Amino acid sequence: QKGDYDSEAKASLTLSELERWLVLSISHYHGTLHHGLNQTPASCWLEGISRFGNVLTVTKPHAFIIDFLPVLRRKINRSGFLIDLPLASVGRLLSIPSKIYFVGHRCSR
Image (tube, rainbow, N blue to C red; front, side, top):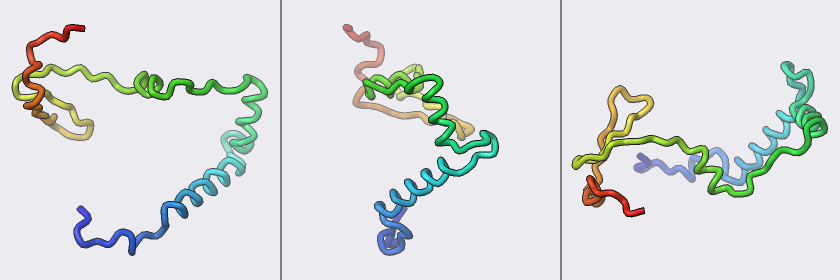
């Protein structure tokens, strides 16, 4: 929790400086010889485009995101439902009293 810590006064970079640093870092990486590729990542990319054509782009961002979201099926009971946390040794029970009416009822779709 933040508390009395003045994050703005103690920040090392502004957001705009961070964005600039990130762009410069990525540009430097893509222009530097990669020992595993024996060429720069940028030249490897251009070579791939010339050999295989342009990459497919996402035309429906919302559908793309949904397609790649994980599907987790959970049983809901009167107490809520259990979420398995990846780094936890035990799951966490989430209680949803406002939705409890729907437990045991089928959707009419």
